Length: 167
Image 1: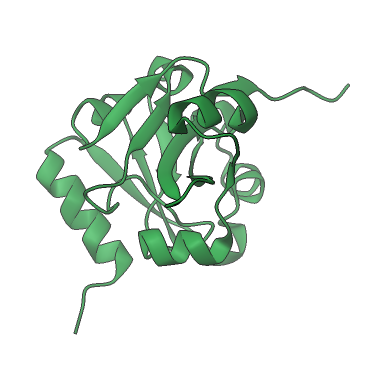
Image 2: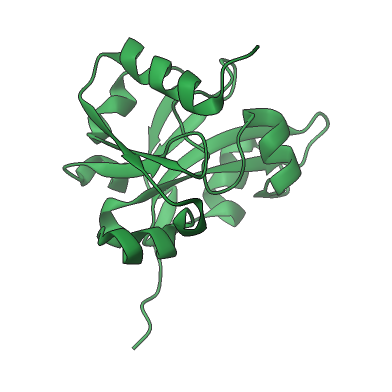
């Protein structure tokens, strides 16, 4: 029997030897806005891991970590990093196929070894961030210093832009 995403994430975090907190989460609140509201977590202390795709032949993939109060710059920064004419968010099916995780639980702590991990520089300014834990019922609070330890990781300036606020 193969390990669950939760078990693989726990093992990956243990191997990084960095202090972290595992947070159980009701799956109905796994999406960022609902999670932050329900569990009283500041949006700027929550981060998302999103799979993007460069539409070349063959297709290229990368996982991106950004604060929940921002938006990936897919049309400029991501596209340029892939050196392609077009880039977009991966579909839910692609995300599951590439990462083995479902939307709402994708984490940077159990990605395929050859998948680039691009972290927006703003993430590194936080004291801690809450990220997906590999499934919709687990989150991880950890120092962003963890990204100094994860494989295939690059800290990228302006990977994401602050989302516009509504008045």
